[in-house]
Image (cartoon, rainbow, N blue to C red; front, side):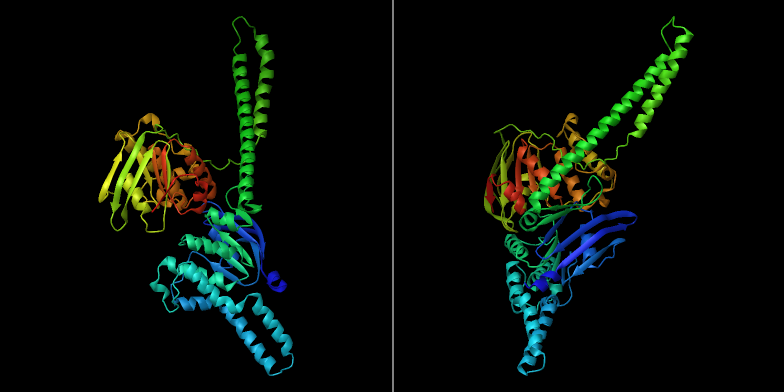
Length: 534
């Protein structure tokens, strides 16, 4: 890539602020990316990640702040085009390349004709075409179409393709076009393992700048050179961490610890001051009522000092401000105990023709771990549904130990029912207690899990974000205190921080755990667990 082209790839944003319906969506965002930079953007659902990309792309004007871009721009958002053909979409994304090649052809013709100044024009056109390898653009697109599992027939109408296919076609175009700036919103959606590997390799070698919104921790770890965290911080501003994903995790954990310590110290100080004020008030009350035989003179001399003490303690308390906001929640896994070595669940040669045609057997004891892997359509979800008793096998048997509680976290949340998150959780606990599956003493509250913030507990379930509904699903599952946890793509829609905490908790629990996942980072973190490949 030439020095001129490298200098052109630049993106700068200063103090971006966006509000919707009076609610801040983005506040105080500053970032700079240049050629060779790959910025990962993380945060819970609803923190403004997609909004940030829209602002950076110029499709949304911020309420405050400014964005400066230099260079060509390629954007893969979550709106999938459906008009035209695959070939027409490729031509749109390669329009810059086509223009560069036309300019080169015109310069070459002028040089051949010996026109004045043709040598300089030709050299400039050649440098421009070489900088982006314009002659290889169509080949790069074809390679990416194949690697991502997208259709290669350019005559295919986009409307005839699935959402996933259309997304993969557009992503292949962007990877082949070599834009100076790439803005990608959850680019790992709709990709299999081969597609993920190809995307990772292409982004790592991309000569321009990349801004990447993703929940995929493996992609962030393999690609990002810096991380912008939009989740709340102690001062309310986003945090930018250099050094890639590993440095982000280390910095995030250290900052969280400092934040929690500062908040705890201020809260402890406030409680001590409240105690001092309460004690001073008690002394004032008892001072006005001395023991029998004490004269009026004693009461008169003691009263002013006691009043001054109360006033001083009240002033101390008023002067003490807890100016550190409450830190984010931490996930607290309830104890899930199962007798070590006791057989909890056994499936022998189970089959579901059309979904899981080959017989499979699973034996789970207390504390066992199992990861179920395989391509899409191999039957991972079907196997977990069989183990959970959600569907009966067409062949084979599933036996559950007496009194063993088995629970399944499905891939996606069920349609929301009326009521708040708190009511949904309480109703689930009530059903368990009424059925005799859970003793009242075992039932824990929703707030103690650290999954939903207080303001979300009393919000209607239908108004929760996708990530918050996923957290509620996990809370309802844990309410049953299962001895067997069956988790189907448990990291879907969850923030990287929560997934890290959940992974640590799963590794330590006494229950048997079965994971079905494509999450490459989760697969790495559970590399020591036994595998069942379908």
